[in-house]
Image (tube, rainbow, N blue to C red):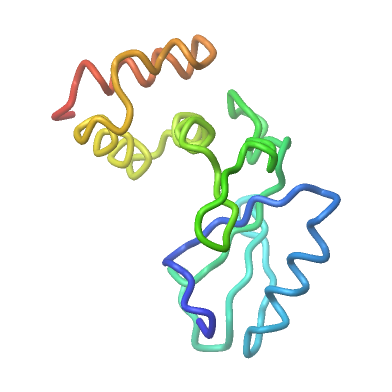
Length: 142
């Protein structure tokens, strides 16, 4: 990708800012292609781009999938990092607990393993998400 984004980044956009932010980002790409796969909107940069180069577009306050326990965190749940706004750790963990794919579980176990999050964190989340985090905390080796 022309902007050197990390592999499979996810843009979390508020509806009010979505079009302006997205248009500005996409205008810098060489040949953006929009598509929807499994109900998720995505962009690829150029004809030779691979699926791993996709940028997922999700909207704050909306569920990515109807069956998810929680919506995407609000863009207000972000903090400044260098010249960027990024989700707070608590909001990121909530997203990981909501998606709960194998890679999300691995990321959460890594966070637990380096004490970025700990056994007190399940209390921060609704029952279903708290149970998932507690399970990961209780089974660090899977």
